[in-house]
Amino acid sequence: MGLATALAVRARLPSASILVLERGLLASGATGRNAGFACFGSLTELLSDVDSVGWDATLALVERRFRGSQALLARVGAQDAGYEHTGGWELIEPHTVGVLDRLEEVERALRPVLGAGAVLLDDARIGEFGFSRARVPHLVSLRREGALDSGRLMRTLLKACGAADITVWTGADVKAIASEGDHVRVEVGDLSLRAKHVAVCTNAFTRALLPDLEVTPGRGQVLVTDPVPGLAFRGVFHLDEGFVYFREVDGRVLLGGGRNLDFAGEATAELLTTERIQAYLDDLLRDVILPGQSVSVSHRWAGIMAFGPNKAPIVRTVSPGVAVGVRMGGMGVALGSGVAEELADLIVGSGRL
Image 1 (cartoon, rainbow, N blue to C red):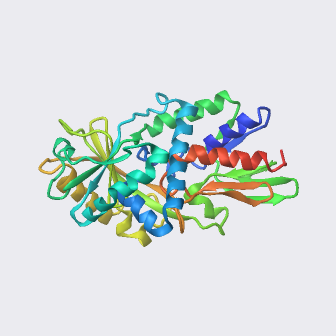
Image 2 (image 1 turned 120 degrees about the vertical axis):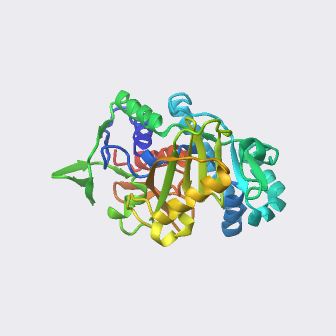
Image 3 (image 1 turned 180 degrees about the vertical axis):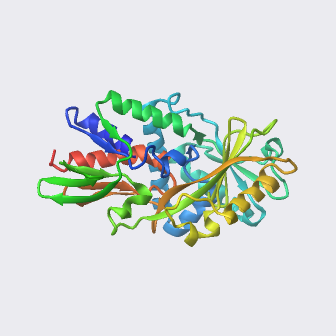
């Protein structure tokens, strides 16, 4: 978000002095630890949203995700983002088969945003992919989805910032931000910086700087297997309202999720894995995704996402010269570049620059 916002501001203000302050040595919250999904919402997730906030709000968010993904690829190019239009699928479990009664409703509603056939029943591929038929009686195709290489994307964005004369400081842990008349004071380390405008793009860590915002951290735990000989699937996959997700990466399985097992415990900014959720992921890997196969895990990690009372991001001015683009709801890849454009418009339209 920070790099995309800096590039969006540069496109509007060719001569401005722009500095990005990166808290870690690398983007280590959600950005550098995400699974590389370019997705817009699975069938069960969308229906949960519809039942909560209605079709209008749900479709507005889907469109925001889709347009954001398109803006990202337009900015960096598919090759430099490591993007592949793999398609996506949702595994429908026995206790959720009732959602298929609303499949046509969802497909019809999504047509103006994603085109015809964006969500279709695709049971024939269950056996091809090797999933457990007992645990996965149905499969739904999400054909507009894809996957990207998060590391390559970050390198591309950093290179673009360098070419655009945008300075990036890493290891710059901001301690305080304060509006002071015609400038904003930013305390970072033992330095006190002054800026005409500040954009806060710290997602789950935003309340450390702006405690009144409705932003709650949500940890996402992930595992990656060793290479799986003859792995039968490629693409991005979801189950359980998007709380579980997996994909193939270089012949391995990347599997993450399970936050819904312990919402309270996972509402944390600690970059740690837990035995309970990792065991749950292990069980899914063994019993659902690769049944009958012996697979070892190469490594495990956690990343921190940001959530709130609804799934819409927060993009607004919070004090003179300070605007925020945060709370991506686990969809930062899809939302980030579009939100960056909105945030740049706020900054440039503030009249302070």
